[in-house]
Length: 358
Image (cartoon, rainbow, N blue to C red; front, side, top):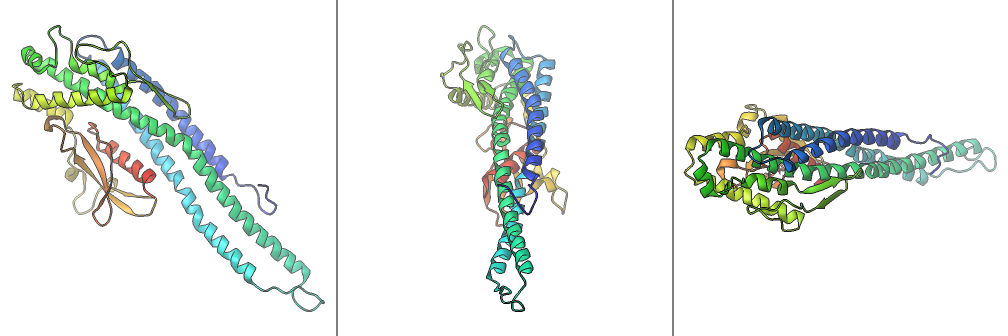
């Protein structure tokens, strides 16, 4: 709306430019890296993944996660602006009510009541307050609208990165086993077949699926074609393929726990897949590590904890973060992940706190 007594706000325009720039930079880096990771997995040849390819996957995955988390933190700071504007709006609205309730007599005849000039200025001041309220409300609506697209984009990236976590872990497990365990034991466990085809290489592409992310964050998916084998066959549904492949990975890891594979190899696998610092080692004695506390949009401070999934095999546990309120009640749980990075798990639950709690 046009304003008479105040200049037009530049808040939403400035935020729009900032958010657009952040999303553009993230999109350029993330989409390029995701496409590269997808090609590395989908185009992997026979045999275990080469060291240089695996290292490239790991580095790209970590790089995209760090970029997403940086943008998430900046977006969440911007999301707090509307709430900060609510307090002054309420103050202005209260002031308007008080002013309107004041009896202000007009100077008619002269000498009685206030001069016309004074009441005109009073009316202008009242109109200015009303304009400030209207403008602040417009800014709130604009900020929330501006954030819709990057939030959709970030949510799509989170889904994709979670899939790559599983796919990369499958290839890491396979590499450690094929290079260290006896072939006859791998055959018995069904990790390779009589022709040397490898189960985890077969399911890794299905853990990721075929997808594309549009400029506004919309995610388009379609089933993988031409990847069926005796070890794994597509259901024709993307999500079902992802669920089935993850189940297959869990079953494989469970078999390893109870297998005759040398304990030294099992220990190497545990080190590979469980290289996460215990929460107790990450906190300073007496004073908690600030990373393990987060203030939600409601102003409440939540303690964050890392927990192991009780249903995952001990040789390769999944973990997730939880948010606990001041009464010790768990209010949110993060997604289960093979990721050994505590910061990624913590950033994921912080994002959920900022976006899922009132």
